[in-house]
Image 1 (cartoon, rainbow, N blue to C red):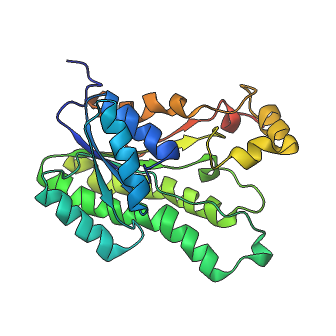
Image 2: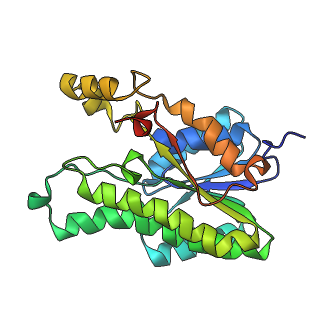
Length: 253
């Protein structure tokens, strides 16, 4: 059996009704996992579940707000009752807000922190307690170039993604002895619906292509190998790391 085979495993991917989350979910399904999709829009989530099921994938859906502590606890309890306690957690849910810090309200700052960082702690805590009980598991946090680098007008996102890197290390420090591997993926500039306005901005598009050694934007499917690797037995001695998939952007000045 391949060390990348996820047959018999259950994965929860937060924020997976569209975008990169759906891409991660499809990769895990293709490797053999049953994937629990998550989002706050129940209708969109159900549509994604049905579309993926029609492709032959083993999927179910759990609509809940990953930034709400009570909602997270309730959702994990329901997954337990359904026999879908996750062996693999992908903390993907996130939002972006582009605004200069001088114009940024505390409420907007907190909303980005709660969605992008606190949610990973809440879901990670619930998942880890179950993984420890059954002998181990995999936690994959989704960071960003902004886990290491800053850019004007995205301060809360940058701080949250920097926090993801350190949360990942903290998870490894506390849970590695319980056979939990906690790692992160740091995507570069990827071609998604969220970044479409940036792709359409001639100046920004030119900057991305010029700043990236590969000379182009990344494609979402180029992240799939990494998520399967970090979810599988192939990464059993990898812990507390962040893997940048960015066409070389973080490697150069």
